[in-house]
Structures are given as structure tokens and as C-alpha cells.
Length: 398
Image (cartoon, rainbow, N blue to C red; front, side, top):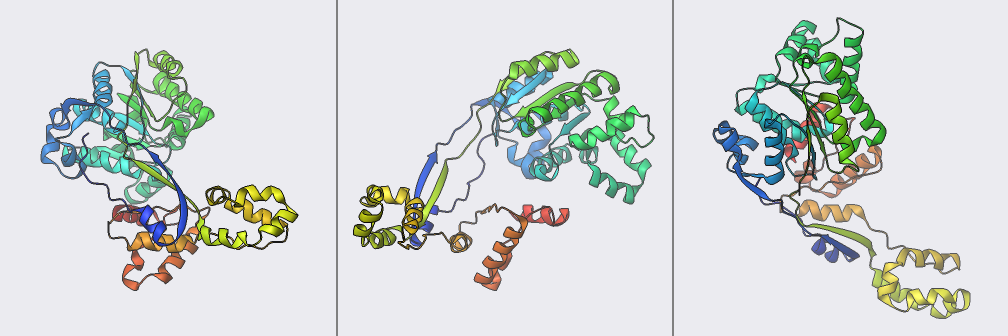
């Protein structure tokens, strides 16, 4: 998948220097995957006449690892695809499903955190005439659908679907209903005719969670499906892929291929903010050199050279306070930094992670009070207490 857009990035270096902050910067080099000669429209011609992401990708070449995974699936094999974020793991199996029109089940850790992948899948299926054959279902979605359509219609939709998108928690409950021969099952017809099961983000679960996922696969293959479906496991990291490959083959009797892909990754720059006006604080501390020498001479090695002081500033200041020398903390003001990002006209998005929902709401309120009215809507909070519809709208705006 060749790069189709320019990423809009704010210049943090300029922002921090204008505001008088000292910082350290660490650069992670960009990486590019190998490309194949196969394009998306070579496999699914409808992409070239579609819209959205499908249209955008239609003339793009496959990554090499995508092509390897796609061809392995065509040969009836299981696939373990190990590659980082942004490497197109979703497309590797989705195009196989679209090409073969087989029934598939994809499991994400949570649907709320997988909105981007789900949106792309809905787009791909829509442009190939299968929009109504995609069903996104978890406990909350099921309750909503039942209230609107009734249980019978929900079962019908699930049975007619080509792709069902769910999570392990909901699927486990469904398997319990099937095992107890309950009339309240909704996915049984789809599961009986499965051609492919996809486990996304296996690394999310940890060892215990991964064992549960394997157990779910065994139950579906051995007790529910009419014939053994292929299995795809997608993950950014995996400690012992050969062990998992052997296990998958044991479950469904199909050869398992391990594919490692290099992700598309832009250059990452990490700025570690050391503090504000550090040089002024350092000059202030130097006035107390004699007192420091008398009370704690070991501290002198950290204040005689500014380059050393700036690395250990907070520890030095704390130590000085313990010996009776008060020095103001160079604590960063996060709101003034974020205001600069908001005022930046590159059009990029700034994500801020806080320790709690309350902290997020408090910070958002602070920012809005410092912004003109016309820019206050540029600040949004995003968390589980906001309705699903509002969260989706915020994600679209981003």
C-alpha cells in the first residue's frame, strides 16, 4: 500500500522553544515495507469504481507480506501475520474473504477501540455490493438490534451475513448458549458455515487471554462448524510463533504459515520536556554555591555544568530544598503547550492521554476558557462515558 497522503505534523521544537522550555529529543527512524507488483484493484476490480478508502487503495500496490498472506489463504492454509501498526494486516485477509465470498468471523479485543478497522471493512464490503452482509455485534449492539428489529430478524441477519465482527467476551457467551441448546443463540447458523476465523491483536490479551482465545477456536472447529475453517492470527509481536503455528494446525488440520512484515512507519520524534526557564533557575542556584558547599558538597558536581544540571534538574532542586535552599520548580504548563498546538494551522490532530476521565474533562475545560469562542469546539474529550454515537462523530472529525 503506497503512501497516499501527507501526514500533518506540528513542529514541537518550535512550540517548546518559543515557550522557553528545555527538552531532550529522541528520533525513531522511519521504515518502509517491501512492495509487490499486485494492486488492490487487480484482486477486487470494484475498488477502482468505489469510494473512500477502497477507491484510495485501488491503484496502490500490496505490501509483500500482504501478498504472501493472501496467497497462503488462497492455498487453504492458516496464517500468523506478525507486523506492526499501519502495516495493512486487515486488508491481507479481508480481500481474500471478498474474493472467495466465504463466511468469516473476526474478533477484536473491543469493538470500541477498533472503529478504524471496522469502518474500512464496511467500506470494502459496500463497494463490492456486500454492505448488508456485514454485522457488527457485541452485547450492547445485540440489545439495540433486538429492541429495534426483534430476535427473529437479528438471527436472520446473522445467518445471512458474510462477515461478523465481534469480541471474545460476546462469542464466549454465544458458545455457552449453543452448548446449553438455548433458543437464544444468534450466531449459530453463521458459525456452522464458517470459512475463516480471524483473531486480531493477539498481543493485546497476554498469555492467559491468548489461551482462552485458543480454547474458543477449538470449540468452534470441533463442535460447531460443519467443516474446519481456516484461521488467521494478527499480532504486532509474538514470542514463539512456531509453537502457536503447531497448535493451530493441530486444531483444524491445515498447514500454518508464519509471515513477518515490515510496517510503514513515519519518523517518530519523542520530546522529553525537562522544564521551563531552566537556565534562569540554574543561574539562581549558582548564587548559593557557598551554602551548598557547606551543607551538601556532593551536589556541586550537578550544578557546576549547565548541561549536567538540566539532565537532573528536578532531583537537584528537590535535594536543595531538603538542605533549606528553596528553588522554584520548572514545572511545565501543559495547557499553554496545547494551546500552541491548537493554534497551529497545519490541521493535524493532537491526542492527549490523562490519568483519569476527570483529569481529561478538567484539562478540556481549562483549554476552552483560554481559547476564543470560535476555536473552543476544536477541543473534545473521548472516553466511555460519552455515547457511542458522539464518540464516532469525534473520531470522524479527527
